Length: 68
Image (cartoon, rainbow, N blue to C red; front, side):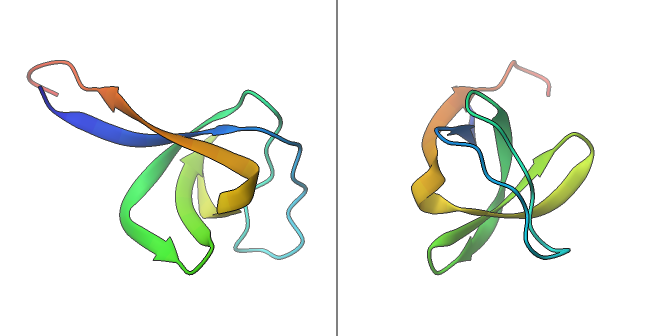
């Protein structure tokens, strides 16, 4: 079964630059493959793409339905 990489917010994060994503605890952020930048991850949330601090999220694999 295919999977996608996701991250769940552990803490609140307020973006401090235009390329960062703000998120709250419990928010699910879809990670962009190959989007690791040191301790930062590239993800998508609420129609926006940006980077999030890796130490503020828990990364996990989510199964993808067949045909998706």
